[in-house]
Image 1 (tube, rainbow, N blue to C red):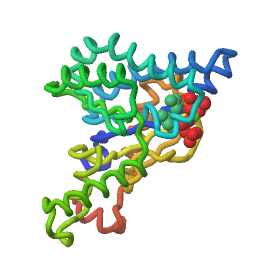
Image 2 (image 1 turned 120 degrees about the vertical axis):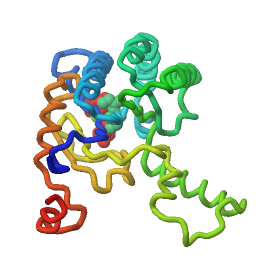
Image 3 (image 1 turned 135 degrees about the vertical axis):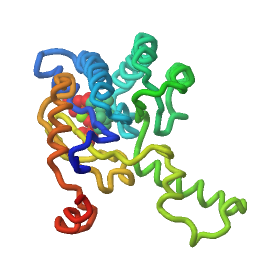
Length: 246
Ligand code: IPE
Ligand code: IPE
Ligand code: MG
C-alpha cells in the first residue's frame, strides 16, 4: 500500500454554512448553529470509525467576535450545552479533547466547562478532537513569535541560529499535533479565513458545496477517498516519488 492510500492522520474542517442552511429553510441563524452541533457529533463518530487520529474543527474564529452579540451568545451557549450533553458519549468513544486559540477571551463558563472536559478526557486513547475556539492563525503566529522573543530575552533560548521550524512550531497552540493532511471546507467558500496558516502549508484542500448542517458521514468518507487518490509531492517530481515508494 502506498502512502497516498492511507487514511489521513489529521483532518481539519472549516464548518461553514450554518446561517445559509437556516435561511434556505426559512429558519433563524441560531437554528442552523444548533443543527451544526448534530453534524459535529456525526463527524466525530465517523472520524473515529475511519481511523483518523486527529480531527480539528474550526468552531469559532477570532473574527467571529465581530458578529452580533446575540449570535455570539447563542454560539457560546451551544458550546456549553454540547459539552454537558456529550461528555459521557465522548468518554465512551475514548475521544480526547484539546482546544487551540485565544482561550483567555472565552466567557468564564465556557472556559470552565472546556477545562473540565479536557481534564476528564485527557487520558483517552482514541481520536484527539481539537476544538479551534477564538482561533486566528495570525494571532497564533504573532503570539508564538512574542513568546520566543521573551524566552530569548530571559536566556531560555540562547542560539537563534538553532531556532528551526520544528522548534518554532512548539510555540504554536498546536504544539505536539501533526500538521493536517486534509482540510475540508463546506458551503462552497474557497478560502482559509485565518485558519492554521502555518500548519496547512502542505495540506491537501477539499471544498464541497453542502452547508455544514447537511454534512453526513459519507461526505467525510468521500473526502478521504478523494485524498487517497492524490499524490503528495512535497516539492519532488512524480518520478522521484515512484522510486521512493518502490
Ligand atoms: C459556520 O456557519 C459557523 C460559524 C462560523 C461559527 P456560519 O454562521 O458562518 O454560516 P454562514 O456562512 O453565514 O452561512
Ligand atoms: C470560518 O467561517 C470560521 C468558522 C467556521 C468557525 P466564517 O463564516 O466566519 O468565515 P468567513 O467570514 O466567511 O470567511
Ligand atoms: Mg460562514
